[in-house]
Length: 106
Image (cartoon, rainbow, N blue to C red):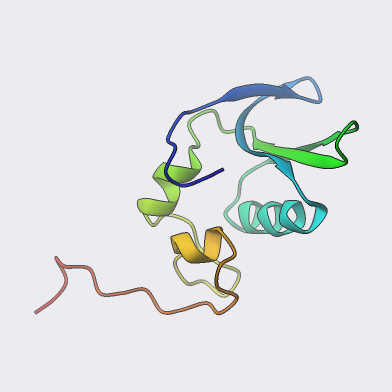
């Protein structure tokens, strides 16, 4: 899901209502998101979209919204660092230290 679209979508995956994280993703992207979300203690559901050979991925937490949680900085990477938008979108393989929050700067 693009991080500039905040629409919250609910879909049924394997008979369970889920907050849709992304749909139409490659197997590599699906594995990346599944691992990242499971590290953050979300119950992940994945369904194959047969006609396109892609996947849709969702979490059973109905309040989860990827845009909100990435920018709220509540997700952690496998190494325990804050997930940045670049890391979420896989634009940067390198996990970077989080920038200093303006309210923490002295």
